[in-house]
Length: 258
Image (cartoon, rainbow, N blue to C red; front, side, top):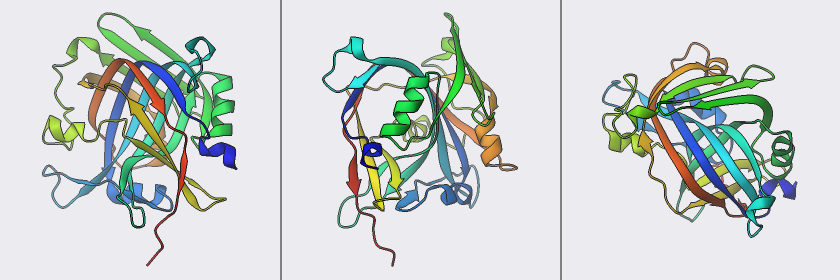
């Protein structure tokens, strides 16, 4: 359906964004990519002869989301919990694109779940979300209907700019970790009807993520999707007050199978 191709530009304001990135064995993530995408891999010296892929969980307090050009007061404000895989789209005869493949999206607003599923392939689910922020702590709880999207995380705001990498991280340096800190320029979803890739480009004027210490008490999606497979928290970054926009989606041909 053409409507699900993200048919118009969108702009919004990110009041807060906390992104957690987990490393998993590459072979565990590859079956979830679908046609046209390859896993964005990383080989760590901390794990001999093992390559990792990454799943990002983005927790975003979104304000004034509306079609591009509309006044902010017409926009919608909501909370988004989005789970994505870092991937690359290899295009025939063109440079590859680096971005994110959508796995799951949770929101606390009924209208957003309905409209999001009309205009995108983001797989929105309506969930209960509670947030609490103090001078020292940012806490987020997501309670989904099925339980699969449940999440509970506490972030230490006093650690901003001073936090190191989590002890479970597969990254050797902060520079390497920042290479796998969302958002990326592109988001991908495969359209079964057209057999093409829907590519959505994000636009931001500034993005200065700061490392932050977190305590993740629950991440049910990872437990349900990857039973028995350790998901290693490898970075956590936080930003505030970011204007953001998305261009209309484009349909891209997939490379032919050899």
